[in-house]
Amino acid sequence: MATYKLRTPISEEDIRKLRVNDVIYISGTMFTARDQAHRRALELYKEGKSPPLEMEGLAVFHCGPIVRKENDRWIIVAAGPTTSTRMELFEDEFIKNFKVRVVIGKGGMGKKTTEAMKQYGAVYGAFTGGAAVLAAKAVKNVKSVEWFDLGMPEAMWILEVENFGPLTVAIDAHGNNLFEVVQRKVEESKQKIYQKLGV
Amino acid sequence: MCLKIETVVENVGVKLLQLAVIKLPQDVKEALQQAYHEEESEAGKTQLQAILKNIDLAEKTSTPICQDTGVIIFYIKAGAQAKNLDKIEKALQKATIRATKEVPLRPNAVNPFTQKNSGDNTGRYIPFIHWQIVPGNTIEITVLPKGGGSENVCILGMISPGEGVRGLKKFVVDAVMKAGAKPCPPNILGVAVGGGADIAMKLAKATLLRPLNKPNPDPELGKLEKELYEAANMTGIGPMGLGGKFTVLGVNVDYAHRHPASYPVAVAFQCWAARRASARIHPNGTVEYLTHKVV
Image 1 (cartoon, rainbow over the protein chains, first blue to last red):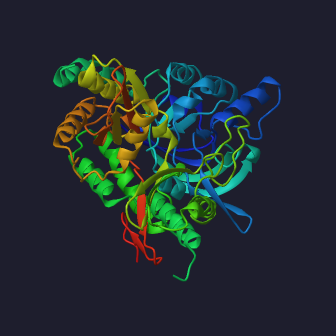
Image 2: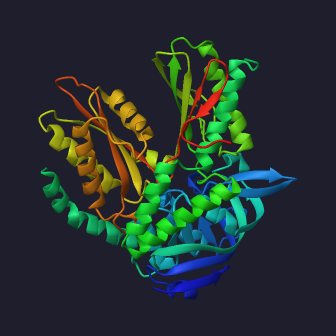
Image 3: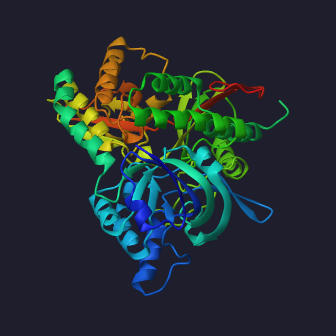
């Protein structure tokens, strides 16, 4: 287990060095995207249009933040991760088309995403669910907001961050998925639990 | 009484929402601290440490603990002799709109057909209010801001009555294993059996309001809670699903009598940010806060 500090844009080479259980901190540019923003970005791509941000080498954060406007400036109040599995529908295409290098969220992702990360060079960084104030502290500036018509949580918030983390690498670019390992152990303990409960 | 009841209720509603989303009740904090001390997995301990650090930062900066400040649910115990009960619903809607701006809360009320977010946490049936008429002349209001991550794994099973309590136990641990990392463990589980589909789920969610350090008044149910707690923690899912000893902080069980042909079992998941706040309003307008110290 090693700790890495990465700055965006992150290269595929740097991503391939990471292994599950490593801890990473990110500085530079990241953006939030939940279900609706993923869907819209992919629809635009299909129509041959570009989303409002060049995403290559950046980190996408599964997050619907609480944001406050002060003197015409957006301030991130709280910004913990949301459940990533909802984005499993879109993430493989998203990684393939936009070359994001880090996907940040909670709860892990499935086989399609793990496969895309292996193929195109990306990792999944698990951030503590609910630790919204810790996350907000690492956000130095809101660069802009796109697609605000989707509502505050679903809009795409483009953020400047400094040492955003700790993120546990839970899916690496070599096909390893920490959540699957835990899930397998859970399966293995099932019979023992049933036995204890007498069911 | 100088202030009108609706003004008092509105102010109390705003205060309760603010207290709930910024500061966890003492029993939840203590359970998380204990979990941190007893957790053996490295990854699990890192998660619990981040959680404790986050709780502390939230209190110090008066910021919501989690960005998902939930769908707003109120539980009201209305004294039968209390006046102006018809004004309460409107007052709590106003409180929700104000708290959304003032705290602030994340706007979390979306029309399921148009996908439009109302922007102020109100909408059709939302905030939802559960009413209970009780003897007396006070009004007790509890707010439960319920996060979406843990809500998405809540589950109802209409199991076969022949399977009975054994079926119930299996259903609960299966739910925990299936939920895995999704509900932001360590969780609190509200489990209820009987009544009917709606009644079981309503009771399961309401039992999340019982503090972790308050034993079940029924010792038999207390035993069942302990058994389910130990079984859930044998799964090894651990804090945030990264592996460890603490998958749940507690299990609360309630029940209703059932139809001979039905055995509804409901499991309501609550995330580690188990937020709730209560206050009692007296006829003269004085307010007692029951879950938090208010100076």
